[in-house]
Every structure is written in C-alpha cells, then in structure tokens.
Length: 89
Length: 438
Image (cartoon, rainbow over all chains, first blue to last red; front, side):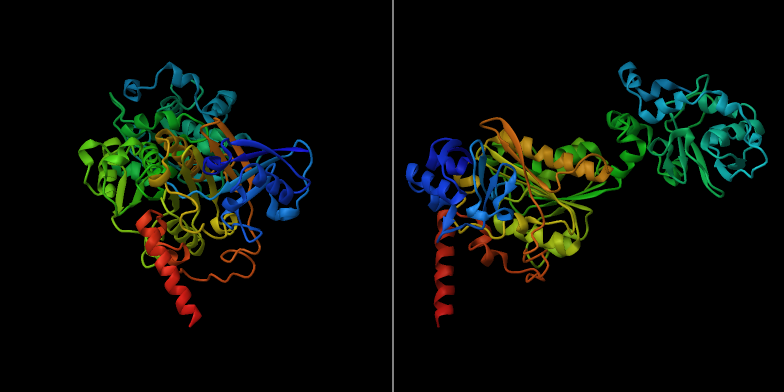
C-alpha cells in the first residue's frame, strides 16, 4: 500500500526529496518503512517511540493527534504531511 | 465642485463601491417624495448636519431637523425645506457622488445600507464633502472632518484604491487608520509586513527589535538598505515606514522582548504579528497574547518553507499546534540553514493581509487553518488546527498561568542554536540535570 509522504525542506536532507512514498497500514508502520529506506528518518521526528512535540503529522489535512495518533490507519491514496515547527522570521 | 482634485480616473469610476451602485438602483423619485406621505405614521425625526459650503441654503444653520424613515427620505425632506439641497448633494445625478460622504451617527452609509439606511428618532445624519472643493464650495473645515472622522483629500487620494473597494470604503479605511499593530522583529517577515501595513495607513505600528542591521540581512529584509548597516533595526524600520507614509505613528521598542517587558509592550496594541526568529520569543509572544487576549498573526519560515496562521483569543494558540519547542539543534535557524529571500515577502504579505482582514472584519481568516507554503514545489496547502483541550496554556486545565523562563523552556539563549549557544545550552542542561540529581 503506497502512501505519499510530504516533508519539509529540513527533512529533505534525510529523504533527498520533498515527496517520498512508503508503505504501512498505520502511521507507525509507515514511519518504520521510511526509516528503513532513509536511515535517520525516525530520529528526526521521534524520540523514545513518541513523536517529538514540535513535529505534527497530518493525514490529509487532519492532525493525527486528533485521530488515533501513531495508530491512525492508512489506506491507499492517503497523503501524509510531516511538519516540524519553524522558528525563522 | 472642482472634481479635478479627486484624481479618480475612469477605471476607478467603473468599479465604484457597491454602496454607491446600490444608490443608483434607488430611483431619483425616492428623493423627491416628501417624508410626510406615509399615511399618518409618525416618521423618525433626525438631526441633519449641514457642511459649511451648503449652509447658504440653510440660513447658515449647522443642524436642521428633518423627518424620514431612511437617509433618502430625510434628504428629500431637507430638500423640501431648503429647495436646492438635493441638487447640491447629488448634482444632476441620482447617486451620491464620489466626493460626498454621508454618515449616520458617524458611520459612513456605504458601510450600512447606502441611502436606504433606516433611521430612528434622534439619529444624526451628516453630509460631508470628502474633498477640498473648489469654487464657491469651501472645503469642510478641519474640525468638521475630525468631528465625523472624515478623511482629508490627501488621504482620499492616497488610499483611493482601498476606499473604492466595497469591502473597505471610507469607514474601513478609518478602521485601518485607527488600528495599532505590533510587529515582533524587523527582519525577513517583519519587513514586508511593516511596509504593507504602512502603505495601508495603519495608525500606529510598533516595532520590537533590539538588533542592528547587518549586511547579511539585506538579502531579504526590505526595511533596510545599505546605508542602514550598523543602525538599530527598529530605527531603520521607523525611517522606512515614515518614508513610505508619514501619517503612520511608529513606536520603536529597541529591546529584546522578554518575560519582564512583553505584557507591557503587547498591551499597547490591538493586533500582534509574529516575525520572531527564535522559538523562545515565539512561545513568549504566544503566551502573552493569550493572557492579554490579543489576536496573534503568526508566520515562520525556513529554507523554502513557510507556515502562517491566526490565533484568536480563546480559540487555540501556538502551544496547541506545537506543545513544546524542539531540543536545541533539531530545527536549524535561518542563520544556520538559510532562507530564500523572496519567501519572506510571500509569507509576510500573507500575514499583513490577514491583519488587514481582521481590522476590516471581512473574509475568512486563517484562524483554525495552518497555511503551508512550499516555494520549491510552488505549492500552497492547508491543514486543520484546533484548540487542544489538553493545552497547558489555553486548555481546560491550564498549568501555565503566568509567563515563564522561555530561554530555559527552549533550552538555549533566546532559542538560537548556533554552535556556541548550543554548547552553552548543553552546559546549562547538564547543570540543571546535576542540580536535579542532587
């Protein structure tokens, strides 16, 4: 099951591209799949099994905190966005 | 009337405000009907303010009494009492011409229902030529303008492209001119924000920035130019703003914003726009805006990415979106990673747009939505954001009830993450851990 994942320029240094594709029935599985493809991926957004609190993941346009968090189920054609806080001004 | 002073060309007239267009739909006959024709019912009695140039008709009376259920009827009634009055107002046409403003209780009827604006007993209708007229028609005096908050002819010209839009109009322009906006940071975002708000005629703009202009700022910070290198950014910003529009009152706060001064500074403004370059200032400004119930227009940038949203009092905050800052080093600053200069313009002008919409009370604000701008893909997306009931600041059971030590919260001096500060932050963290272990 291929899920489109959009990342910001900061994560691009790990993935090499701003849009990548991964597989998984849940967000957690998807992130593990991406970590296998792009070593260091999870380290950028997670700590001890939880998402960093400055990183949000959106399934389509909804924050997964308000769905089932990392257990949020995915289906073909879903789009995931991974957004860290930015401080620049 | 000397229409030449208005400098409104054909294009402008072609897109006259809806209020004036609406007047056209009202037949001229409505004006010629005396108010007393409505079958014995008592009509509202109102006071009509007559501008100086029209007073030769009213025997130099500044106010006359008239009756009518709406503005059109009242003007017709005045015309009946003082024949020729309607012609002075409407000329040979049936619309209120561009150089005349009519106010009901100090509100311009363009923002109400045009000449169909209903009236009640005791209302005041004021007829004001909005420009310095020529020939026999003397301009309305300065006190007259101030009394009803009218615009000067220069202001009518300067802001004409805003005023002719039905969503703005003279009353919207006055709202802009009566508003105060605080801009946090006179940098990449603060620059375009300040410039567009200055051009729009915001009454008071506050600039918080303690830094000085460096040559590396000039790749993107359009408030500052070569000659400003070494100057305080707040001072350079003030000069630029007033060069664009001398009417804007600029207040400089040439200090770092801290827990000690943020309440006092932010309390002085209606709207707060965040263009800070570090997490500590972002959490500080957010928390202060929450405590003072100030709308916060937030924007942030890095590399090719921008994020913009609006936090309205009681409806969620920055901490709902990002509950905690990244550990130092996890998210680089623009100084470390870089930022596309033109990105600042895109994101900053979106912030300026949002504050103007809030001031005017028009459109759909970005509240509840995070707008994501990816300059590299040239893609704009939105995701939903909402008030988090578990938010430590604005949730159901808040634990942050006053300002905190934001440097400590963000793990480094002012949230900057360059190497030296990183070391200092690590040392401070180690010291805290040692202290906690004891």
